[in-house]
Image (cartoon, rainbow, N blue to C red; front, side, top):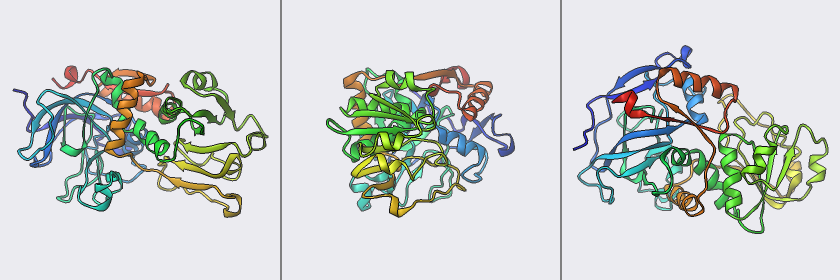
Length: 360
């Protein structure tokens, strides 16, 4: 029978000042709950949130800091009051959330990611004071509601990034009417933005890739874009695309370079600009309300568990594949990936693999 260890092996940040050189660590898991599921991890995608958290951009956390929330693994233990049909040895996923109250109005209406008692998969505190730790580790313990079955035809390394990055862009797409007859822009063609192009096209929209320059133009068309706007190379882009788009999802890692004076001009009346960006805490944006002219600007958080399941169904049925680069997990490779992520050197999502070799 598969066993869950008393201590979990991981690669974590032990010194915030040297965050790009994480170390092998071991930590105590939180107390096992009656509706918890333990998962032995097979692979984990690398999210921009991992970098922000590791670098301390969102505040200090108890050490070791263990990041990673695009997790694929197998069930090794179920709590006595679990009602799900997960079987021991079944392949499952865990995204960016591991707990909520499951009782409030938001939870009961598939908005558990907006619950006041939300606990993210790493870097947030449970009511008992335990700080959650993520998927750069041998195992993870999760409330059963946040464990997700993975369709058989999606390879694990391609499934992992769907559970956070993929769902983070998929949620505002479907909540804001992306589909046939709609003109949808994806601003920022990175780890999340490249998935946005794939999903918007698969949902039937006419897709506009928006980037500062043309470096990713060829990639954008391969990913599904019908049009490409390079805002730093086309001085008249706001006039050229005036009154065009129904929806723009802002996927940029920072909002500093997003021109919120010009962007509303390319929106139709009633159009929506939705940001999924979570930059450094010190970053602010300034909006001129007279320039919005019937356009809404809002923010979207994590998608729901139900939306993850819808996304996996779409990816499975249409046999979609995101663009990834794999690294066996170990200290040296986590360092290299962190270095490359900081430089923006990624096309377009890293995934750590070979967990059995590192954690035995």
